[in-house]
Image 1 (tube, rainbow, N blue to C red):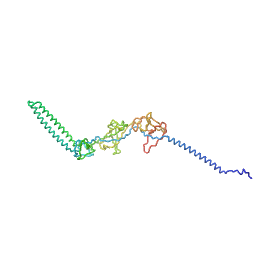
Image 2 (cartoon, rainbow, N blue to C red):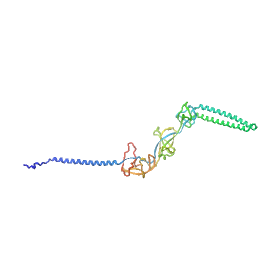
Image 3 (cartoon, rainbow, N blue to C red):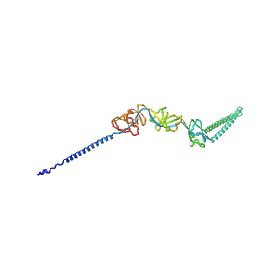
Image 4 (cartoon, rainbow, N blue to C red):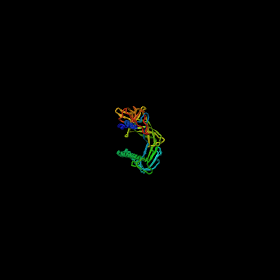
Amino acid sequence: MPEPIDALRHTPPRHLKAVAVGAVCVAALVVATGIFARVNADASLKTWTHDQAIPTVALAKVSGGGERDLVLPGDVQAFYNAPIHARTSGYLKRWYVDIGSPVKAGQLLAEIDTPDLDQQVLQARANLATAQANQRLSATTAKRWEGLVAQDAVSRQEADEKAGDLAARSSAVNAAIADLNRLLAQQSFKRIVAPFDGVVTSRNTDIGALISVGGAADTALFTVADQHRLRIYVSVPQSYSALIKHGQPAKLSVPEYPGQTFTASVVNDAQSVGANGALLVELQLDNAQGKLKPGSYAQVTFGLASATTTTQAPATAVLFRHDGPMVAVVGPDNRVKIRPITIVRDLGTEVEVGAGIGPSDKVIDNPPEALVDGDTVKIAAPAKGAPHAQG
């Protein structure tokens, strides 16, 4: 008979031990995986935070020295342009030229009918004839009285009175001649003629139209323009004005001739900066073929020369600090180097730099004020379709 103690003993099966060991291992694995994931997440967060702390910058477009183009709008005008007004009132009798007609100097453009003026001329001729008749009579009387004085038949006083009357009659003749010449000069303006060789660019009258001189209706009857040579006026910003020289050539382009340019040259400037902050520059262009028209919109391109040792950079890339102008340059390791620069010429939106940077440097555009030497930065990718910065 077995003992009672031995009967209470129970030995667990072996497969239960294996299950327990497996459960312990799974629990340990889960714990280890969680710890690893948390550690990895903390590391990723630190990396992301560090990356976010690095500023992203855009590079400025810099270029080397040499010739560069300055494109400005130009106002094309005829070399001579004359609005032709009437100098005498009346009615337009007839006109002989219309817009687009080439004319020569002195060519008849129109005639004005002036009946009132014609009558005034006739009256002035009659007044002159009367004055001349009175002068002849006074001259005969004065001569006779001078002979009577020699015979002591009349007094000297009476003879002097007759001589004075002759002088007054002579002055009246001169006044009548002057008045007649004035009216004849006005009458000559019945014929409207071209002042120079050119083209009629406007006609603002027609047959039978009332011509009123000096009134509200006194408008130009014709406009004649000499287009064999043109003047082009360009407003050059003050920052570029020192680069424009007399005799400097420029290229002119107009919309009606795409891809074609015309050569003009600088002949004059206003020698004064206007209220718009620009210098008015005059160019002239030979237009013997008549291809260009006055009043056209044109683009004028100046080739501005600068030293080959200079570098052009946008003004937005310059940092103005206590030690002078500086720029931020990105090195090969994406670390910033603050460099002092020497500005040779301020061109407004751009500056010419004589020393401090070169065309191959990666210059930061609009650098943050807090940027210092050694800071790490990320370079932003250029916008799609935008020009790439140098370097």
